[in-house]
Image (cartoon, rainbow, N blue to C red):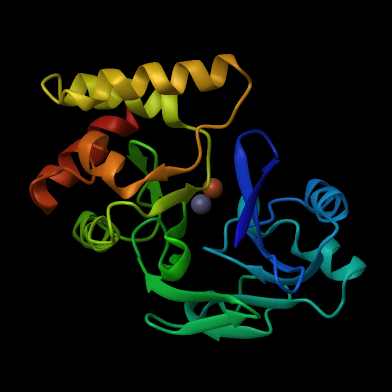
Length: 241
Ligand code: ZN
Ligand code: FE
């Protein structure tokens, strides 16, 4: 497996997930089509599938134009999003397996940001695509679910092998780390993470991917002791400047 990060819109990331043996690929969360088609051409791969993490337009807004260019694409999302993801050809639920040649993904249902939110976990490749559920040092807002739901979802992701790379949906890392430092001034890993993120951004690089190990050490939402503390932190973050 090879992952190519495809910046979309203002601060979204789509990911081209390539099976090198076949030259076929899936695109996770194409917020728009043009940069995805450009990456597909540049990498000289065949795009075979759209893997959606949830229904928001900044994650599936490119589906229509991608399907116009490539009508045979498989389009997969959680069954809750059956009516709200364009072009669906298959729905999935927690624990389902999705195969694309040598790529094997397992679906982790993680409601909270939305009620159809899923992560795509490629265990053999030690990678997980988390959309707007788990960000570097942050998590998505609670648009459709509640704090208990999101806390449970994050705890499931946190239980993945620590070396798992976390490919998240938005470049919010520096702002998230400012909140993390204010929330947990004694967490020693946070200042180091701030330095790493600042260096990457100064060099024009993305901060994705993180790892589960880094999130366990720096993410105040993953580190929340229980759903109540999670809820309080989520609420504080909503108005943090
Ligand atoms: Zn979203
Ligand atoms: Fe988003």
